[in-house]
Length: 157
Image (cartoon, rainbow, N blue to C red; front, side, top):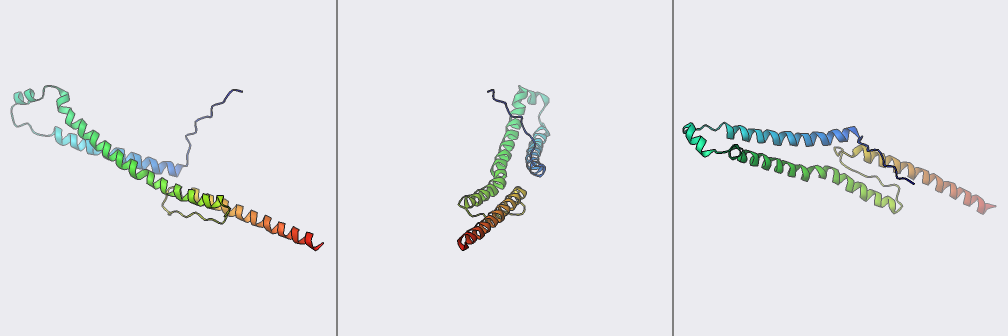
């Protein structure tokens, strides 16, 4: 039997996708802005000596651009590190609480209610889990009551 490759699904929840996009785009724009400001101040520096002195000091364009490129790379590295440290925390915290709640469900407690902060990006997901768990708890509760009624009826005969 030939394995069929699944089609790549790039559709995710729009609000969550927008939340991540805004944070990543904001970081990229901020780091580009800082790198541009550094380039502007470096390039705007006035040459007080004659053109000949400047020509002798700068033999290649790479000598002029190397500090700017290094500064821009440093700013991008710092902003990327900050993004990598803090963005996953907004997702990892709620996922951890969901995992802990589902471990309680695994033990048999369907009355678990998973709580996360209102501004967490996975709030709708947790609400759906809580609704599903409440529905399962209600169904199993009704089934248990039906079993008790049947067993009491059987004993009475």
